[in-house]
Image 1 (cartoon, rainbow, N blue to C red):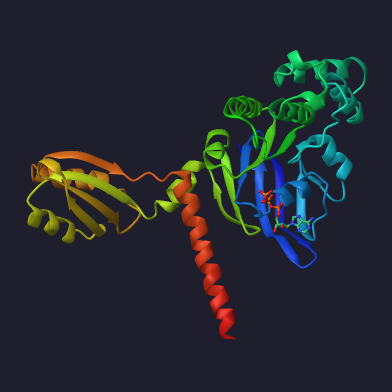
Image 2: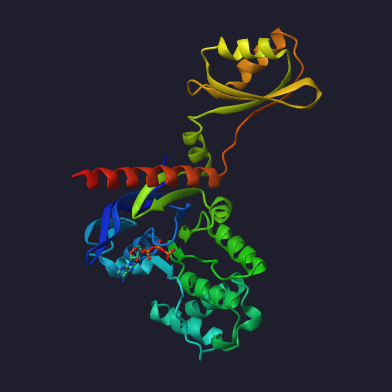
Length: 329
Ligand code: ATP
């Protein structure tokens, strides 16, 4: 059975005056998932998150959290959400433990439960040793953890984290990522980042935002698969050049190929499939039939970076084309 839906965003649009920050954004997030909003500066990540957290009204469209409309049932929604904005405002003159108790109270926790929850998040976020320190005297990494502890203190179903690792050193980044990963299952997490390897490391699924629109969505593997409609296979085989060329040319499954000589009499060949079929078993069969030595047969794996560049480059081309067409009017 499919997991219940935690976030449902439909056709969300936000205008700031004449500027359209997001347009027609739609996506869903299932309970327990960690989903990354990925995109360059200004893509609309913060805007989407602020609308979901009930801090900003949408111009058009709907957003629901655990079935509640974020605009019309904002109290219900806020109880279920822990939101860490970018540049989280904290009270520098408060001590860590005081601040978290204060935040817990604001979020409706009282007495023993409040104390227990504060102790739990102090521990969970690695803050126990700095519990009595003034927030203003903490390093950026620790302040970020205080922000996370605040987002977690009322045990929200949904945690929304805007650029949770920005400005941290590599060690701090690692511990914050581990912490986020440990939340999966019990909590649903929506985080934004413009760091691709980060999304790949932490997230089950990603949404690529560009200029206020969702360009692609899926698990890293699905995104990879989608782009591998353009399947490419690398073959290193030792064979007479003319026969090898004749082989690739004579196969309808191979749409195009490139060959370069490699060491030891081998040829390095990049083959592009005509359809969505994986060429590897076929190539293996053809080469074996001819008893040619084969030393490499791999499918090109797309990194998230390739995907990102491909998707956004396509969009840039479309945008440019659109501008040219507009110019002709
Ligand atoms: P970043 O990674 O830089 O935080 P982002 O993906 O979070 O970027 P947003 O902050 O959502 O993007 O901004 C989307 C667009 O909306 C940008 O063009 C931005 O300039 C614009 N924008 C954001 N906030 C406002 C505002 N308060 N008034 C006017 N324009 C705004």
